[in-house]
Image 1 (cartoon, rainbow, N blue to C red):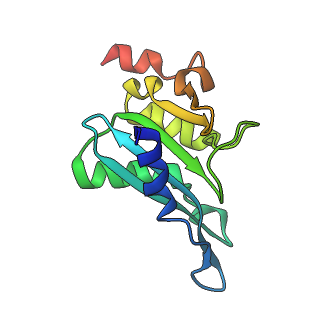
Image 2: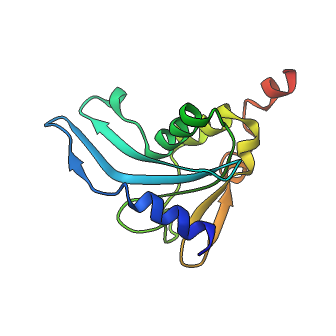
Amino acid sequence: MDIWEKLYLKAREQYHPEDVSPFIYAHHVVCALEAENGEIFTGFCIEGCSGVIAMCAERVAALNMYVNSGQKVVKRMIAFRDKPPYGEGSGMPCGACREFFMQLALENKNMEIMTDYDKREIITLEKLIPQWWGNERYEQK
């Protein structure tokens, strides 16, 4: 079993779309990520009628990583709905998630994101967010 299958299976455990209340829907997008030290953390999407309540699965997984281990660097990530990423843009983190990972740690530009599970195709975050505006702030640190 390779790391991508491990990540897929851990994320799939979280997939069970449900109405949390008449206003909140959750577990319809799931994510698993491998932290720098090899630990795996998961997350699921949760959305409410008010946009400020929404949290993507990717950010929830990253927050679980940080809260539970203090880590900020992600090596690999997979996110999906009812089936693993199959190309055609499936499995791609949204702009807010891309930005969050870059702000969390500059090293996250190297994180591998699964784009096609069957073909084991990946892309790095840096390719999804080229010429990122915050590089200068990291350089000043």
